[in-house]
Length: 299
Image (cartoon, rainbow, N blue to C red):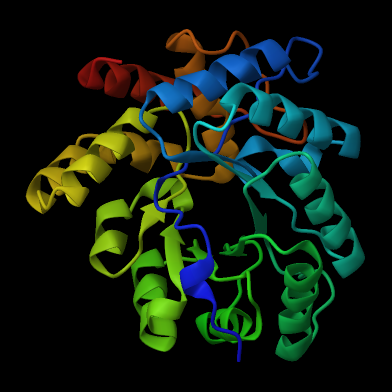
């Protein structure tokens, strides 16, 4: 058993995932990426991530590198940067992870390989290999597209020095958080995800932060400030303000790409709402709903 959690950096708080801006040719708009990074930092976020919400699985390796270089350069040490390095092969995930470390990421986020079913002990070894060879903090991502049972996540936590963070995104996330803390206690550090829809409920069950979308990051940051000050009722009430908006954005990940980017464009952060193919744009009714919700929120 490896237990060095206390020696790891103490990541906590709000870590929005950057929704990647693409220009009219569907190339990454690095100018807008820098603006978006600054927008998230100005919101009071404690860190940010480049991950599934960034359409990272639609990027070439050279694009992945350039995106991380751009974000790390813009951040300039002010907040933490988490880079998704999950892959279907251990060697590929390891290569992504080593490159992320070289380019300045502060932590990795790794999904388990799921295309070819393998026993749980092989999944554990996948993380052990990355932990031993990269030697930096790892978020074990449990998401509905590649779920990993809480008991297996805790096996990974106990078997590695660096994979001590669990990002619980398989619904219901509140129950996932409760089970992880029950099985792993203080040794596992839990973050929520899934757009932060259950942020406060997850905190109440032992999580220490969330990785939501980046369209309205200031709401999460303010709720987190209330929570840290022990003003839990105000934290709940503040998050309830964006409840209807989150209900709209979370209808699917694909819907979120379009609507989050629409919000960011209307807020003057990015110029284009383009989403790389394959994708399906939401219908007009969804955009009318967005109009009304943004008006109610005053954004």
